[in-house]
Length: 115
Image (cartoon, rainbow, N blue to C red; front, side, top):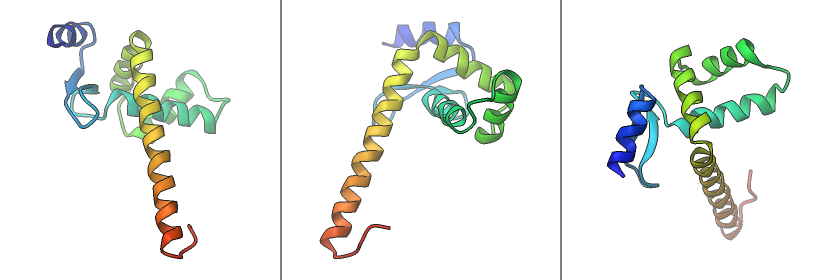
Protein backbone atom coordinates (compact mmCIF):
# COMPACT_ATOMS: atom_id res chain seq x y z
CA UNK A 1 0.00 0.00 0.00
CA UNK A 2 2.67 2.54 1.00
CA UNK A 3 4.80 1.70 -2.02
CA UNK A 4 1.81 2.30 -4.29
CA UNK A 5 1.07 5.60 -2.52
CA UNK A 6 4.71 6.68 -2.85
CA UNK A 7 4.64 5.95 -6.57
CA UNK A 8 1.41 7.89 -6.93
CA UNK A 9 2.78 10.93 -5.08
CA UNK A 10 5.85 10.81 -7.31
CA UNK A 11 3.64 10.58 -10.40
CA UNK A 12 1.30 13.34 -9.14
CA UNK A 13 3.23 16.04 -7.25
CA UNK A 14 0.94 17.87 -4.84
CA UNK A 15 -1.02 14.73 -3.90
CA UNK A 16 -0.66 13.20 -0.44
CA UNK A 17 -2.47 10.33 1.26
CA UNK A 18 -4.33 10.78 4.53
CA UNK A 19 -5.98 8.31 6.88
CA UNK A 20 -9.58 8.76 7.97
CA UNK A 21 -12.79 6.95 8.89
CA UNK A 22 -13.22 5.73 5.30
CA UNK A 23 -9.59 4.61 5.04
CA UNK A 24 -6.69 6.22 3.28
CA UNK A 25 -7.49 8.58 0.46
CA UNK A 26 -5.74 10.92 -1.95
CA UNK A 27 -5.78 14.59 -0.97
CA UNK A 28 -4.24 17.79 -2.20
CA UNK A 29 -1.26 18.75 -0.06
CA UNK A 30 -2.74 21.22 2.44
CA UNK A 31 -6.14 21.05 0.77
CA UNK A 32 -9.26 18.95 0.38
CA UNK A 33 -9.50 15.35 -0.73
CA UNK A 34 -9.37 14.76 -4.48
CA UNK A 35 -12.87 13.26 -4.40
CA UNK A 36 -14.21 16.50 -2.91
CA UNK A 37 -12.72 18.56 -5.76
CA UNK A 38 -14.11 16.18 -8.37
CA UNK A 39 -17.48 16.14 -6.60
CA UNK A 40 -17.49 19.94 -6.85
CA UNK A 41 -16.63 19.64 -10.55
CA UNK A 42 -19.62 17.35 -11.09
CA UNK A 43 -21.86 19.78 -9.18
CA UNK A 44 -20.68 22.76 -11.25
CA UNK A 45 -21.25 20.82 -14.47
CA UNK A 46 -24.75 19.82 -13.34
CA UNK A 47 -25.59 23.42 -12.45
CA UNK A 48 -23.98 25.02 -15.52
CA UNK A 49 -23.75 22.42 -18.31
CA UNK A 50 -22.68 25.00 -20.89
CA UNK A 51 -19.45 25.83 -19.05
CA UNK A 52 -16.27 24.29 -20.41
CA UNK A 53 -12.55 24.89 -20.61
CA UNK A 54 -11.29 28.02 -18.86
CA UNK A 55 -14.79 29.09 -17.79
CA UNK A 56 -15.38 25.74 -16.09
CA UNK A 57 -11.95 25.87 -14.43
CA UNK A 58 -12.59 29.43 -13.22
CA UNK A 59 -15.97 28.45 -11.75
CA UNK A 60 -14.42 25.43 -10.04
CA UNK A 61 -11.69 27.66 -8.57
CA UNK A 62 -14.38 30.05 -7.32
CA UNK A 63 -16.47 27.28 -5.75
CA UNK A 64 -13.57 25.45 -4.09
CA UNK A 65 -11.30 28.36 -3.26
CA UNK A 66 -8.41 26.47 -4.86
CA UNK A 67 -5.82 27.80 -7.27
CA UNK A 68 -5.35 26.76 -10.88
CA UNK A 69 -2.42 24.44 -10.10
CA UNK A 70 -4.34 22.66 -7.33
CA UNK A 71 -7.29 22.15 -9.68
CA UNK A 72 -4.94 20.84 -12.37
CA UNK A 73 -3.36 18.43 -9.87
CA UNK A 74 -6.77 17.07 -8.84
CA UNK A 75 -7.88 16.70 -12.46
CA UNK A 76 -4.67 14.88 -13.44
CA UNK A 77 -5.02 12.50 -10.52
CA UNK A 78 -8.68 11.87 -11.37
CA UNK A 79 -7.82 11.23 -15.01
CA UNK A 80 -5.51 8.42 -13.84
CA UNK A 81 -7.55 7.00 -10.94
CA UNK A 82 -11.14 7.90 -11.81
CA UNK A 83 -12.64 4.58 -10.66
CA UNK A 84 -11.14 5.03 -7.18
CA UNK A 85 -12.36 8.62 -6.90
CA UNK A 86 -15.82 7.81 -8.28
CA UNK A 87 -16.15 5.09 -5.63
CA UNK A 88 -15.40 7.61 -2.86
CA UNK A 89 -17.89 10.10 -4.31
CA UNK A 90 -20.57 7.39 -4.45
CA UNK A 91 -19.83 6.27 -0.88
CA UNK A 92 -20.14 9.84 0.37
CA UNK A 93 -23.41 10.32 -1.51
CA UNK A 94 -24.83 7.07 -0.11
CA UNK A 95 -23.78 8.02 3.43
CA UNK A 96 -25.46 11.43 3.08
CA UNK A 97 -28.67 9.83 1.81
CA UNK A 98 -28.62 7.30 4.67
CA UNK A 99 -28.18 10.06 7.24
CA UNK A 100 -31.02 12.06 5.67
CA UNK A 101 -33.36 9.04 5.87
CA UNK A 102 -32.39 8.45 9.52
CA UNK A 103 -32.97 12.11 10.37
CA UNK A 104 -36.38 12.04 8.69
CA UNK A 105 -37.31 8.87 10.61
CA UNK A 106 -36.18 10.51 13.85
CA UNK A 107 -38.28 13.58 13.12
CA UNK A 108 -41.29 11.34 12.46
CA UNK A 109 -40.80 9.57 15.78
CA UNK A 110 -40.70 12.91 17.53
CA UNK A 111 -43.90 13.98 15.82
CA UNK A 112 -42.20 16.76 13.89
CA UNK A 113 -42.62 16.99 10.13
CA UNK A 114 -39.24 17.11 8.34
CA UNK A 115 -38.31 20.56 7.09
